[in-house]
Amino acid sequence: MLTIAIPCYKSNLDYLEQAIKSVERQSMKCCELVIVDGNDVPDIHLQELAKRYLNIPVRYVYNSGDKSMAGNWNFAISLCNTELVTLLHSDDLLDPEYIRSMFYLANMNTSAAAYFCGAHIINKSSQRSWSFSDMIKLFIQPKGGMVTLYGERGIIALLKGCFIFCPTICYRKSELENQSFNSQWKMVTDFQFYIDLLAKNKTIIGTQDKLYFYRRHNENQTSKLTYNCKRFAEEVAIYEQVIDRFNSSADVVSVASKKKIIKLHLIFLILKSLIFFRFNTAYRYFRFLIVSV
Image (tube, rainbow, N blue to C red):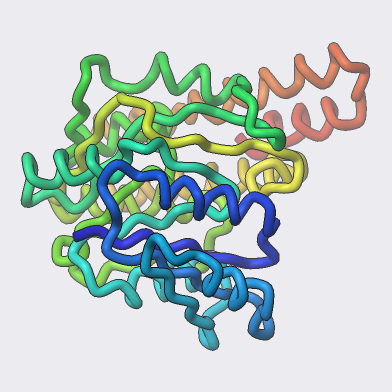
């Protein structure tokens, strides 16, 4: 069976309710939905919300330990009693066929550590949206209906541009070998996790079917970390770590050293800022590109 866990921290309750309803609408029901409260003090609204849904088993749990994003994710996975676990973001939505498709992938590839799918991009109003980084993912991801990532070849594929939407991942707990997310990071937490899995010769399997709705809006973590360039600082740092870690692999080092996807993203943001006369923002991106990349 599969458990859906929703890590929450100052979550928008309207978005969260939409996320829960998307779990309710699944064509194949989950074993349990766990609402993980990572706030500084227990949130009464989350507790009440957990009691409201009767069509699926819902459990509320308060995280009294590590409240970083990585800590909340680790705690959420540890709570789940099933072999398969998905960490659904509190502002996103699942396609009705998500769970059924994850079961299909898991049954076809029983030794893989994680499974993922494609995603539709939606805005704050749940309408289909578009972004440059998401468009680029369509070009850099491996071609074909199914994607298999393994070893150095898998690492190289992700270094060219991480095309995996983090919350689409379904984890197989027995294959994670107690691997945890690193609280050092705010933006590349998932990317480091994938690299660590592949470095252990674990397999990640994916389908390009879009079974997830990923919400982009100005209040989410990604938007904030992009604007202040902290995401790019982390991306540069993780690429440098990969260079040191895999220094015996010329192919990995070659791709990591170029940092093409980071440069391309910054150039796009510079041009976009100039078009909208946001000169200070353009300068901030330009300075980071020249000095730090």
